Length: 303
Length: 303
Picture 1 (spheres, rainbow over the protein chains, first blue to last red):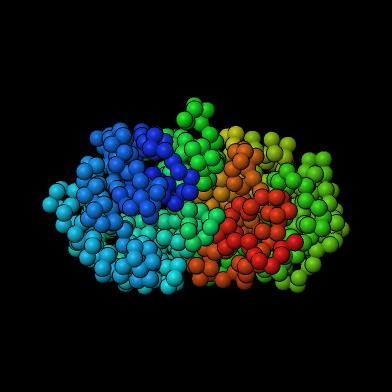
Picture 2 (tube, chains in turn blue, yellow):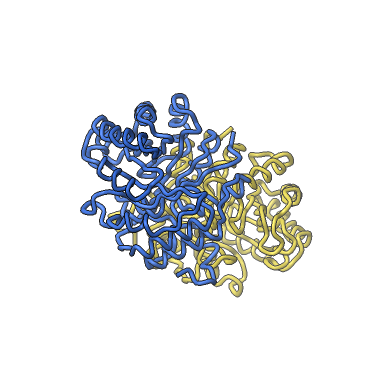
């Protein structure tokens, strides 16, 4: 049964921007996050505490976290790949940190340079410290449908990694179709297996719109009672495995569907579209979402 | 239950191109249709026999129909707004003609300059002649979810017009969300009512992707056993009511989902993507589909 309420988990300022080549200033990142806060979003992943050498776009994570308006109803998670990142996130007063694992051995090796088991060990150090300090940890499992190197991924493997991350202390697991190749049948196969081992209320879904399937996949996930959906304002982000292709599904496209379905999110679509046009102006291109283009650029200046 | 086989009804060369400002030559139209034929599509709406004054892009309909390769497995319907158009279509050896009505009184007035009842009378003259000459007639009902002037449209009104068109002798009714505003809930409400009065095997759905909802709406329609889906190669077309927005859902995006769902169409996606890049090159812009952009431009020259 479809949920009556859904939490939109905004990943644009982190997952989206880190895939954009154009360097965005601290001021514009803060302005973007503040616009998103104004829309009513309750989760906005704000930055990544990762080596600036690997992800230059995220070098100013501490300055972003120090500058944003923190609304009481909204949480601003940050990505922390290791203990060092975790400590910087804690010092930046993050209330939630996120760790990023994979269901594909090869993807884990190539993306975070260690095996799945080694990554889980590393995450264990983060979750242990976080739990001791009252910080919640979100777990991402990437390549849940297919891996750019290995091809299709066995849903059992996804469930296994998800359960291990929950056992480490994650409060939620976000299942990511990293390369956006899945269709509703793949999502059904995945969720049949994963929901048998992980409570639905601990699951989120994270779809990329590379092949245009994201909303159909989200609709399918809603039918599995999944009630947390990751999305990226203006469709920020891309797909490193398909240059020129779309990346994350756009928050406003998801929200338009949820509104139509009568599912409550507490998020104002006009404000999300305003944020989409703001950051797209910064990046010097139109938003990569159908809704922002159909609704058009707001008359009120966005910058 | 989802159908095991689906007919993709290609509307790009007609519904798509007529919304494009760039004038396409007869040769390029023929080349596009021949590429689509090669993909295995069994229905390709090839032209519109309408006044060249109103739709200059379709002034060469007879030349297009005379020049295309007609594969035995494929039918090439053409749009005929009135008896004069029908006669020209018959002379061009069309095996199927299509008539275009609306479920909204105001849209009918503004789009075809007569009331719904008057349009049905006019269509009756077409269907009568067509039946006498062994030509099948397809009926479009537009604005089935909402009208740009009237707002939401009552599904009962849609059912009423659909039944009348069937009674006139149409072999199939295509339900069109002309402005692309519907979400899966709207589609459920619509199909609950319409399938109670029209056999499912006589229904097709025609979605625009203006707000990104088309694939989710198609997935919903499949769950209602609808087995004919209109789509437009490369997402050809636009939305006159939302400048800059997307129009028809892209054939290759629909096909990617159907392939993933294990639904047989007999259509080769690589060939559709080739056709998408071909016509997009002609129009001087990238394809408006996720799949064509994700798969990239074929190495083999398309022109």
